[in-house]
Length: 286
Ligand SMILES: [Fe+2]
Image (cartoon, rainbow, N blue to C red; front, side):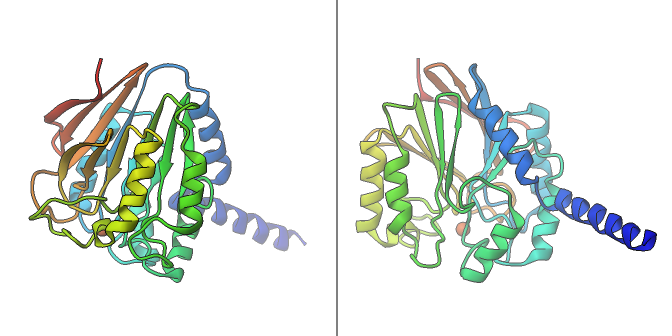
């Protein structure tokens, strides 16, 4: 009897321990979401992306995040090198232990490339909604994460996800709207994935962009290109690539972007892995 109770206790401790390594529990996420929703002052969040396969750089980036203590962190995807690899997920969570929570992840093509790796993603993360695309609020600001790696749709936002996005974005309800996805909608000539990102299917890309513009989205953060690039405003929507947190750089420097939302003003600072300020700009100016 006592032996059996002892074994149950050991298993419970082990379950909590494993949960603590991989991600926060659902209870923690629900509490964090309530806390974010009730924010009523200025706040700052961090955006990074494409940390996979660059543990040393990622550790330097996470150190800059720890120093600055943002309210939460966004990762635009390509979090592990090999889709569905649980060992690599464990390594990621080990390296991310001191990243401020909540830590919101966006699926990249190195994270989800088929149904099996999508199931591993769902096992390894603790995120809102269906965990592959979802939204949350910070005060009167809406944050939307999209999944451009849905195995049913090649590099496009389509089907029920597009319908959900249409229902979720609401410029009358929210003061600002921030969108995050892995694949850039537009790429410049000379970019490594030019013509092979969402620009692979211009009709579907235009449908998404037109929706983001019509719904007055302020800014879209993306990864996939291992660099930092402000692409400027297209029909009122600011597009920014933030994909330099560890994977081999295509150009530029390893980076983390800190975004400060203060009333009607959205200001960003881009910092390199050593903490040097490399850029400072308004997404929405005074
Ligand atoms: Fe990618």
